[in-house]
Amino acid sequence: MTEEVATERTESRFAHAWRALRHRNFKLFVSGQSLSLIGTWMTRLATSWLVYRLTGSALLLGVVGFSGQILTFVLAPFAGVWVERMDRRKLLVWTQTLAGLQSLTLAGLTLYRIINITDVIVLASLQGLINAFDMPGRQAFLVQMVDEKQDLGNAIAINSSIVNLARLVGPALAGLVIAWLGEGYCFLIDGISYGAVILSLLMMRVRPSGFARPATSMLLQMKEGWAYVSTFKPIRTILLLFALSNLMGMPFTVLLPIFAGKILHGGAHTLGFLTGASGAGALVSALSLAVRKSVRGLTTMIQIASAMFGVGLILLGFSHVLWLSMLMLTVVGFGMMQGMAASNTVIQTLVPEDKRARVMSYYTMAFVGMAPFGSLLAGYLAHHFGAPHTVMLNGTMCVLGSAWFTTQLPGVLKVMRPIYVEMGILADAEEVEMENRAGV
Image 1: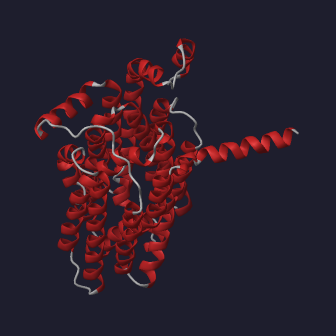
Image 2: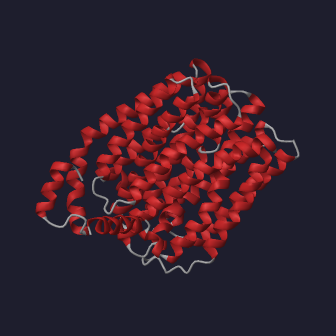
Image 3: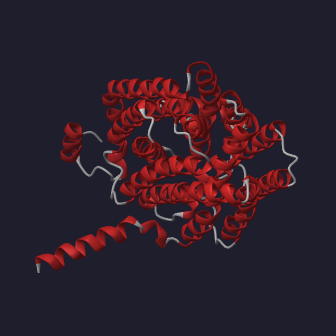
């Protein structure tokens, strides 16, 4: 009997981990995204390897990373306001179509062997322009795909899981395709794969968002969005730590070709192993979040994840053997995804619907928008001091960010508790007191 009860609990917990898939629209989205994201990760690795093959320059790896993300940073606040005035599904159909055409153009230039570094920079900039509208639109549309708000955190965790499953499969597949056929076929596969997510969007039956379109000017809306983000302590604090992690931590990805080629003396397949190891850690992290039944405890997890991210980067800088580098990147991937998904979930839980797109545009700025500056800085530092010393410095900054977040946490929890009580996440004063000892 005891074994039967334990089995039922395990099955119940497993089923609970995928509860957001009960929602038809979200299930369609996951189906399309699962295929499309594999192509996306193939393109990311192939682009890095193409730039490194064409130039052999750490600085130009940083320049390409910068050009692919700077427009996202500049345009994100405007895009957040625009998203709130549009049909989000139609917006995503357009952004996914344009992204597919961008990949197909990159494929054509590479397959005909007329690609140069200027072409890569221009096409990366175009992708950054598309992402400025796609990312806040995607985050805001998630609520419309999941009818019950209590399943929102689970939907974010599942979405993170498929992103990182693709991150595990895509680079490994890209390494094989590059070795056999070249980078151009990675871009071609990616361009075709966008059809899956476009089809899933067209098949959805979407209900109206439930709030009136704003009648105020876009400038006033931008000011309101900034005032909310800058004065509401929980979101402001989480976004500041998230921005620091993406400025200093995330650029390790643009340096991986150097680790694969110069530090570990490998090729494209080595880069695939390194990227896949990071993806494996991130996938485990996302799955651990999927089995959670509540958002309680996630703010403490943000603090721990940032420290783990930083320590993993520091130890990566000391490694000169493949297995140890892969192990450290697994730790890095786990900490990176835990912080990213936990931050997203807490913010999405707290933000009111009429400000969601604007707030998520600042999340996009912190996520993608900080990375170009970090990529440029990482490329410069790696060019002058070497990639290992650069990731060690960046990891140290992430650890310091975690320490700062620890000092801010009591004030953050004080503001969040009444909101969680009102939402029913914390049931009563007794439970609030319990959370006061453990951390929300």
